[in-house]
Length: 217
Length: 217
DNA sequence: AAAATAATAGAACAGATGTTCGTTGTGGGC
DNA sequence: GCCCACAACGAACATCTGTTCTATTATTTT
Image (tube, helix red, strand yellow):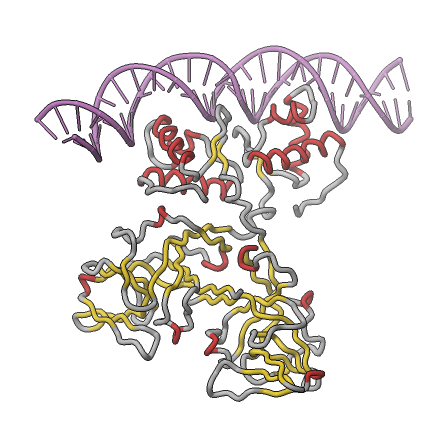
């Protein structure tokens, strides 16, 4: 609410309150006639008249000719995008382990989400989250229990941390990815663990790590 | 989104995405015909058919007979508060280094903020952020450049990671904190680095680490 | 292959919806 | 009282909107 705001008349005050309360209760905006009834007015044109003033003063935004086209001003709730990132499962930072669904990355089947802000993903599309299981990426400072935000890509640079689906094993794993001559090396970041080698045709990259989130206690 | 959720068809997936994106862009819900156009369908009854399924599975709520009467399920958009956490400076994960301001932790002077959601702080008060500088906490998987979310507390348990202000040195550092007989041990999480010992009277705890955030690229 | 079920298409309908216009009411200044 | 500006009223209109229905098509099951 960055526009100059002057003192509201009682009717305008009632209208603003009504809009915001209706929104809070219902999750969608009121119609003009809802406002008529809600504020005890007797004409839609009174509502229209006052909505013009309220829009000019920055309390609301209106979308012309659109039913229920009242929204909150830009900035009041869209400072940064809020993203509900599906936590689609656990990924092994260790040896490949089976995942429950052979169609491994069904983002839409996520049973849990983590909420992050847009600046954490830096505007990237196709972001999902995984909970890390295991210790093979500890030298890259990714710990068991951490959440990794993944961007869905099907190709990565050598050395990037990627979620990889091994087709014949029907298993997924989180490793550093290296494409070498004729084979793929999936390298743990843990000096006690050996690399996994795979045929390129057996490997599907399911995304790369773009952020790590760890909560303590 | 806590209802049982089954695999969505591509159309249902498109519809859900469309609704949420429309909402994000406009601040009010789409009409059925907006969805028809937005997902390239050819009939409002396809939308209706799929909206019934989406509602049953908990992705949306519908309000019968109401124009644009689609809302997000209760809880889906008020999951957590959005917090603007001040990034008040860099803290050394190494030897204590001088910070520019002798009044070390002036939260209000923060020139930068990081936006996180409430579930990351789990409702804690007095949260601020620090950018980690140095490598002395790498064995605790906190890397140079990571952001640590700190909760302001003036006492911690032994072994907790804390930001500590050393009064006579006028320096701050991030270490594991141990209160021993008659002295304080500030322990790096890096086997190549030695502990720092200090008089209890010279030590002010400025907060404890509650989360670690790392962005790649 | 046939049957059953799920999904889609298209049209029509009734009512909701925002907008517009002309009129009336109110309050203040002269 | 008159004039003016602001605010409110009521009616009408065109279009938007959700719903319903039937028929067809696609997919799954037997």
